[in-house]
Length: 473
Image 1 (cartoon, rainbow, N blue to C red):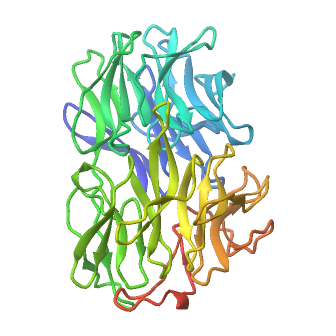
Image 2 (image 1 turned 180 degrees about the vertical axis):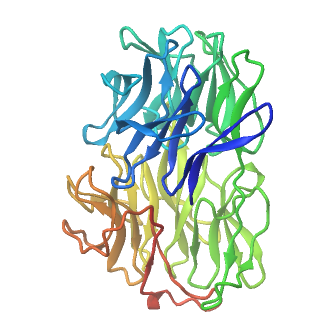
Image 3 (image 1 turned 45 degrees about the horizontal axis):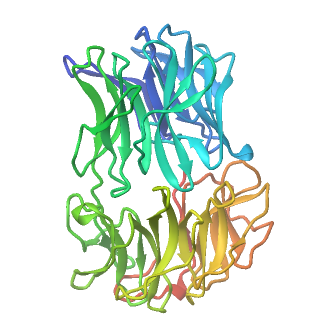
């Protein structure tokens, strides 16, 4: 996917391209206070996971690189002399609210949070917001285990962090000040519908929260005009359906699920040994696990448990599937864990507990799984029995592995692997018993991967599959 930077004039609708398209994703975009420049954060192509801040004239020109290692959009001080952003330091288990001069010099931390506490960062338009009076910086913060987020105000002179109100969310991403300084716009999702990000208004300093939108869409990023008469945001709709194609007939797929906003398969799907497809559906506004038979498109609901159900992995011919679901803690936050359930919807049981576990992959014999867990402070690849018990890590620091997928014969785990945090991710197979020095398929930088059976839907034969499919950057 190519992404460029365009400028649209709101009065006329005319558009001009100011940065040409490339394969590198954008993390955030900000107008400079005078409106003459645009500061944008974009991923680097040589160190996956790292981003840099660039500045380009508003009418286009040669971008200038201002700063390396920046994990959110920037927000300028009212006088335009400084900007704020969030930087994560995985090696230390910290996230930092940083301040720098407008030219990228004098970079320093204003406030620091240590795991499981965090300032929110990522690639979904997150970023801090400097208040109109210049006294505080608002930013989304919270804990990653359990998942529990809210806006905070950080005093610019002292670095003191103060929670704004008592309202908490499953996720809180971008925050933006109202021009009066008496309220914030916040993109957040509730615990009851974790993947529906809506726009909220939070008064300041008392923190009373109220919804501005209430629909089945997602919203990404938000800002208000100077007179607070209008706001700008990106409305996103996850429209996906499941298609299948017989081997050798890739140009003639068949659609086997229907719906405009169900997001069928978007949060995971997995073949059964009988050629059916287990998938996640967002029908009726909440995630549930379903099974569809490609030959007649009949659909049956398997399970709907907790706040969300996603990332299914069928366990060979055992008749059950693992999935991720999140349960509320005593404090009200959510922790995702691995569960298992029979394909008929019975025998729902936990596999992990309180481990912040994601991306399960089940072995063909159904005896064990791999998954990502943040239990140790960083996302790492673990192995555990499907009956529960004590999990074991599959790598040792400074090495790191993630997004494991078990081979059809159960002997290998294809995963994203790197020798330390400053090296690019590589595609590598680990022996299923774990190893410190895996064999490497290639040195290509990559995104989360998935083993492909490469088999026609009507006659699956997973044991004959020999290849790995993965998207590249």
